Image (cartoon, rainbow, N blue to C red; front, side, top):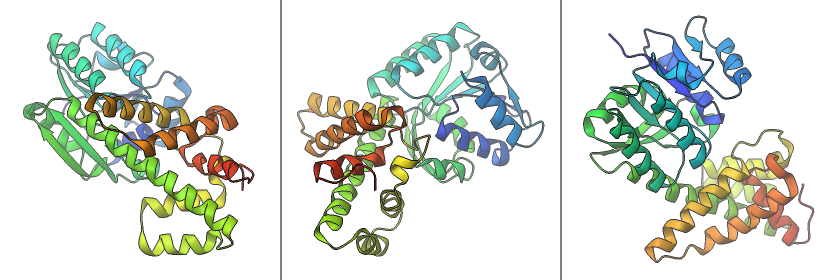
Length: 305
């Protein structure tokens, strides 16, 4: 008999992953979904095939009937609070799979708490934008005991993602360690694009001409972020794709890891200072791509295109 799955947390990434679990996960029971804002869970459930999901009214009611519980929330405090609540339910014998982007020390602490309650744990942070979550093209990093990781793999490649990075039998925190370092590549990419587009505009080359070069030389995420920069999407949308607060959280974690290892990350420091300006200018609507607006202001231009 296939296990009963539950999903807790329905941010931009979580919604896409839930959609693909329901549509491609070969589930023989409705996926239990919970979000602290009930309407978000209800709205998602209404968009998916009838009878394929069940909305839980509390974390407790999501965890108790489930065999495998996926979590994907915004930050370290949120996941710590969520797992603490989960463990007060019936945790023994269950498998917890966390897809959140958090500090590896937090991941290891969660693992210790979960195992102490007689449950299993797999760290499973993911790489990719919300559109990739929607289309099932994420890259998932799996860490923990191989026996537990093997239980998660059927829901990865071909379902929620296009590939996995397998850290079986490595410490749980290795997965989120990689995720934090990997996210600095995204942060630095946006910083580089922002500086390039600002220079192209002010020097007379023009953003359209620079974008043609990016399309030719750097297909993929570079083109996607360049398009968002060029079109003004970075300041026009009501809900950010990669919220400024989450981006700054990742930068803080990266700088903490770097300090502990005796490494400097000057590019991350520069980008984080620009994110601070994004937060000041846009508040919670700020997006990582808003770095372009901050660079424009530094260059004597308006924040908005």
